[in-house]
Length: 297
Image (cartoon, rainbow, N blue to C red; front, side, top):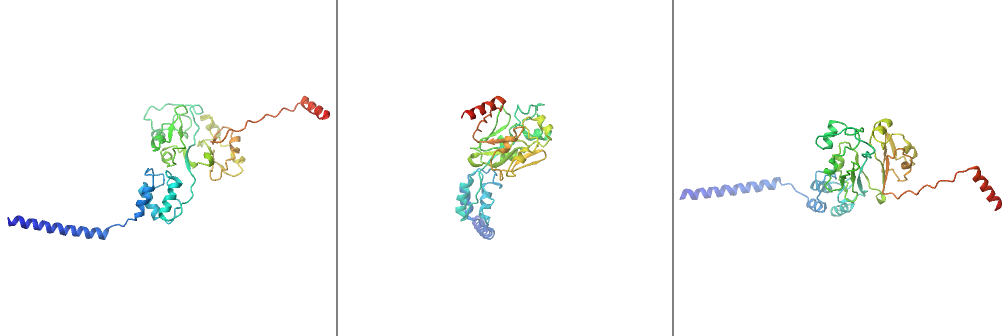
């Protein structure tokens, strides 16, 4: 009986000593966590989409707290209102950020870019891109198997069965960038949403020479440079046989759209252009009639 008591006392003392050692170690090596991290994380949408450039909302909250300023920090899902709340908690000022939206820079519809082959394997853009150029003559355009739509967590992107191209719902798009990363052809880009959601962009990334590009797709940019010459703001550059519009310089004048011979430049959410009134042809009869009217008056 005494042996059992001694064993219990020994175990109790050993347990107490172990607890004391663990407590001392925990106090010595504990890591202090700023309570503001929890406050900031609560304000974030919790999508953990990675659009902010960090691993998740928790990591983004830690970066906001540790950063000296809010410059360069943006939660694309929450947008400017969320960042203003975060800045208020941290006693800082939120940097102004223009709303962004995903844009599909390919107009290679089934009509503009007919198929030259058919892929019978797994319907995955990454796989097809690794194996060969795709089912059409354009090796730069959209493959159309929907890796981007699968990557989107906000149901903002779907493949149009008629055109075979992805379409973005700008009301749902949070500009998280998941679709941009998922596209192996790099045809999806985040661009400034623009005033009244109006924007202009070149819907082509084909780097082949004009004749080759046009043969593969009737709506391809041929790199003629007419748009760059027409732009009064130097917002357009032509490199590797394809034009690109810098949205930070573009003033939405639409002059480039009017001169593009293939319709590769797209204008979104603009009002319809006024129909051009054809001028009456100047003929000898018209000249005589005008002269007669002037004389009578």
